[in-house]
Image (cartoon, rainbow, N blue to C red; front, side, top):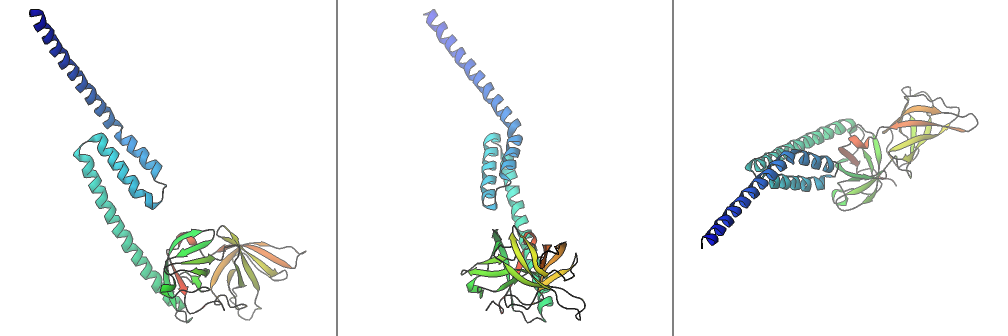
Length: 278
């Protein structure tokens, strides 16, 4: 009988020891995980940061979930709420800045074009693919194929080539299928006009071609649209010459140019709705 009691007591003591050891192990694991929460979260953001906007929200949710799972405390939830509120404020600020920039762009382009008789429709840039630009205005807004697209400084970006109800595709002048008739901007109107063409070479770049070999062109000369064809209104800014390429063995000379149409900094563009290619 005594042997049976001793066995029961020993068994209970062993159970309590196992529970105690198990508890210590669990606490140790939680402590280690809490130490590594910050590096894990930092690595997560480093990997997910290059992903486009559509995945940022999902990445943030997953990160918060992992942090809550590891820490198990109210502090993580509070941080998540604060970050959410901060993102809302940043979004509101960005929206206000965008509106302000759009209003300023509209004001600038109206001032520069008021004497040209242009009817302008402001459009936002949605994307870019192989020197084809996507804008957020379409047939519902009065956009039609062949309409020129400029920025607020009267720099030519290209022309509309395909129209949908709520967006359109714009072929940039850097597109390999683009050819724009241009002339050298002359401060002295009594000098003979120097004509050529700007041909797209892809990758948001283009070059000047078909300048007569005996014409005098210089670095920093400004190129504007000419009136030789009816694709675009005349005197729109196109590019600046950065290097001449002249060969006396050829009837024409070429030049490397910098386009004024900087797509990477373009937030708002303008469609000339009362002018299109015949």
